[in-house]
Length: 380
Image (cartoon, rainbow, N blue to C red; front, side):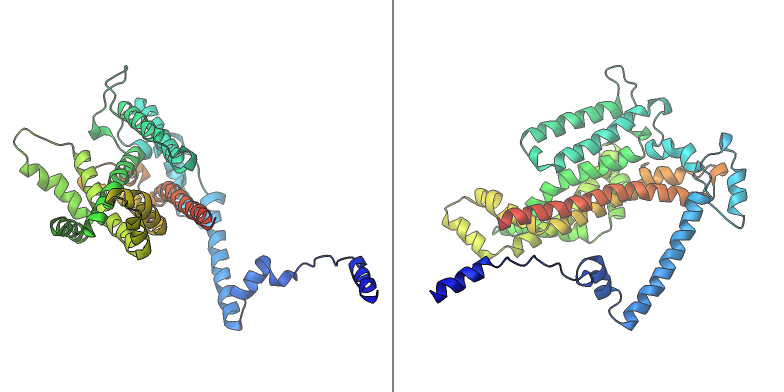
């Protein structure tokens, strides 16, 4: 009876409400205390860095917004030059207002700028659709094909009543997107084949893949672009000429493929040997084993370095200026050659860097979200 009475009294006691941890042990305050103010030296460094960052930020806000000039009439830059030499200098964003179409579209015919503008929108929409996992079906290949055909029709013209525009007139952001998109789209499958070839048991294939990777990685991209633009035409038969943009595109593909191949090979080497043995135990063929078991796991392991390489090559497309192709950076540099706008290159470079940052940051965030999502599915 005593046991029963004791149990009843304990059961009748209401449970205590859950208590929240102290505010200084969790959240932003705890993180700052542990990482920024954990010791007197850490606190001193934090305060000094905070002082310089705040001072720089306030100066940048004054220069970029408070004292800035946003437009000038008829390229009359006297107000910008007077402000630049004053005690409180400010940015002259009027150079972007006046030259933004040339920076974005280069020497493309002015009255036809709506066409490369639509091309940029199509490229961006294609990237967004391709990033969503619910669209990862075979129909996505059709979407890519149709979109790329539409981009070619818009850029070249000559059909559907559109004025023909030769590739020599292309420039700006469309060129950057074309080089980056086609370069990485063709370099990635090439990299997978080369990475598998380096691990092949056939000596001829293995040596060929090793030679390709070591030779391409042993020279800078500028030298490949120079050879594609200047040296390669010397070996062609008389009367045959390959477009300069196509030659630059092939050079970018070969260069990106060599670097991506090493990233993919790292993923293949990091995969436990038991995965290969399990696939062999199931009696799968080489291509079934590679396509359904090995590659998916290997690529998941190397998502961060893959995206890091993608971002690097997206920015490396600016090197095509060495062979006279008007990409986004080259168009921006050319825009300030005009005497009226000389001396305002900082504003142009900031605007161009913002465009690069938007695309690169989007790729970085997407890779982080994709990696986290794949890890969640693996845990389940």
